[in-house]
Image 1 (cartoon, rainbow, N blue to C red):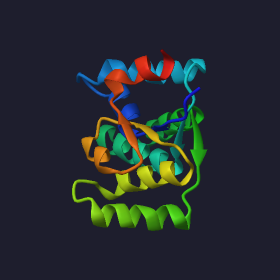
Image 2: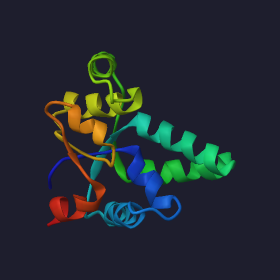
Image 3: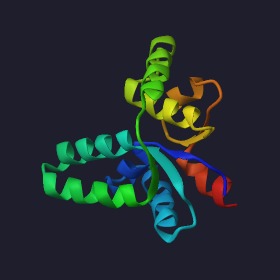
Length: 143
């Protein structure tokens, strides 16, 4: 199975309202739940997901429960000092890249993961990292 890192947006779109990414992201989450896909993520993804869901729904308990479910679908990596330093370097040198996405990219690169499933086109600017759009991810990762 090809290694890849999940971006937080995959899980946010999967539970969100109508959007072109909603169904492809739901399908990826279903495949992860079935064990067909086993993506990786930084623990920062869980923090970001919890923050977004709590802010959007106003329900902290539900956001925490959902976040535990998301965590169970990923191989989680702790954030290290080297991840942070690489993320800061990426953030400084790539103007379109937000810091939280720089940290996801650094987590991937520091662990030899060269694919990230994300709708965020700013990740296309990260040398050595292939951004796989969620609308194509199932086809590429599962076949």
